[in-house]
Length: 129
Figure 1 (cartoon, rainbow, N blue to C red):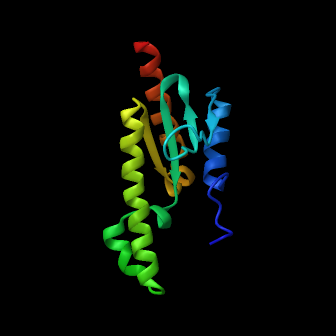
Figure 2: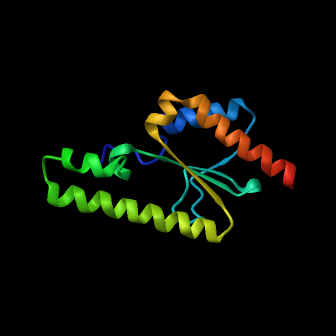
């Protein structure tokens, strides 16, 4: 587990590079916000998280049965991560932040769709400011 990156993972770097190329400027890992979002655009109150499928319980109802070894450790751990994600979203929303959570596979396979979603949000925020 010590070799699993929590910051600067490959999907996160791909998303950051794509945002930067679109002239979207951001801050990284802002510790002043709950949950330390991977990417923060404070001007528009946007917090972006890049979540790994295993660690954050992607399709958990179907995938929890796929864990074969050390189930007594992994299943509660991943469920705690999912609960923490919900608490973090609530805390950020109470600060009037919009929270985007993207799965790593979405960034790798559907980057234009992810970028479009972020750009649409920023464009609507610019119009209403």
